[in-house]
Each structure stands twice: as structure tokens, then as C-alpha cells.
Length: 77
Image 1 (cartoon, rainbow, N blue to C red):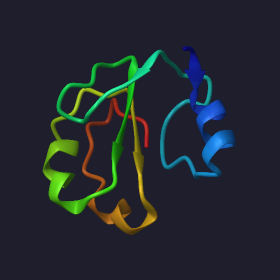
Image 2 (image 1 turned 135 degrees about the horizontal axis):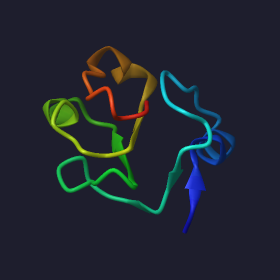
Image 3 (image 1 turned 180 degrees about the vertical axis):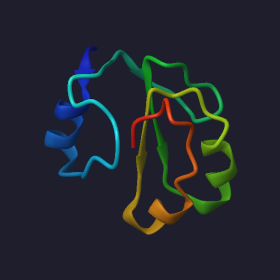
Image 4 (image 1 turned 90 degrees about the vertical axis):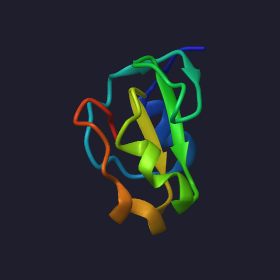
């Protein structure tokens, strides 16, 4: 699998908070186990603390949790 942020936005109808639309990813992984080539998801506030420590290249965050989006600068949101 090879998916760009633009592809992800097209599939989900989401909004990019920060990041490069051409950035490419090869997999999905949990916030805890993700690496720079992975996309992860924050859908439950009980995992918000993991977002600040993730190494994911991008994180999908539900609109209700955008205020909890304390992710590393290297993580596209």
C-alpha cells in the first residue's frame, strides 16, 4: 500500500491541520507502535496521551478530539 495525505483526505473527506499533501505512507499502526511511514488514529480521548509520544507520520483525529491534538511536529494531522 502506498497512500498520500491527499489520498487519505479524498477517502475520508477530512481536513488537513498540518502536513504535506504529497507525503506518502505504507501502513496503518496504533499510536504506540507507529513509525514515520505509518498512519494512526485517535478516536478515543483515553488515548490522547499517546498522541504526544507517537512516531506516526500522520494521525487521523476525530473532530471532537482536535483540541487534544498535542502531536509531535513531525506528525501530520
